[in-house]
Amino acid sequence: MRCIDQRLPWRLLCEMEFRYFDWLFGERREKTMSALALQSGYVRVTEHGKLLEVTLDRADKLNALSGEMYRDISRAVDHYRDRDDLTALLLDAEGRAFTAGNDIGDFLNADPESRKDGKQSPAMDLVHRLIELDKPVIAAVHGNATGIGTTLLLHCDLVIAADSARFYTAFINLGLVPEAGSSLILPALLGRQNANRLLLAGDTLTADEAERMGLVAYRCGDDELRDKALELGAKLAAKPPQALQYTKQLTRHGADAIREQIKKESVLFAERMFSDETRAIFDKFLNKK
Image (cartoon, rainbow, N blue to C red):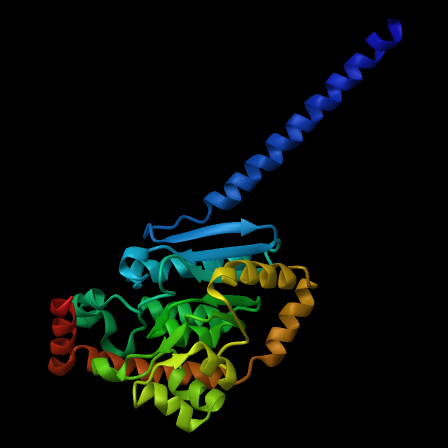
């Protein structure tokens, strides 16, 4: 009995120490997560070990992207960039589509001063963050990937597409011009003819076509997309982080040229966005709905 009594204080001490460290590190984890304050209500972030999953969650609007949603994704990218314990990011979406592209209502209601002299939109702020990011980004695409839903993929390192995925830039049919550097990247990636199918003819590419052309790296059934994407994310997250960063730096070519092209595109995009012709197309699109 004496022996048990003598050991009891040590047990209590150990239990107190474990509780202290759990409180200490638990509080730190809470602070880390609370540092990512999202505002739109339509972007969700989940951690899976070293993988950060960023999910578009505006399914009733086919994940049409508002200015605040772009800002939330940018906040998540910054959070990912600054966290040494996160080594891979997965961008995916809820509902029937990856994204219907930019919210047309936002285009129609935009203030011309916000885009004067080539000022960058929240969408292009996000693109620039991805261009500068030294950590890998995966995109998992299902359903329609419209407008920036396609061009944003050009700044992701690996894209996995479900069989239902459809890639459609839409700009030409809305009276707009390419953005996100797509006028430079797509001809280099797909060849001029295939790029012009998207940018001039306004064609839609199937998942099979996108895979054959090199727009996506992997294709799978819709019911296995998320599992395959998380599996790929975990695979990357398990790699040596510094090697991942150096490899991405070495394989990222022409970043300065892409930035310059985005500037040129942004000036023309703003000019077209506020033109009478394009605004009439926006209005017709919204009224049709």
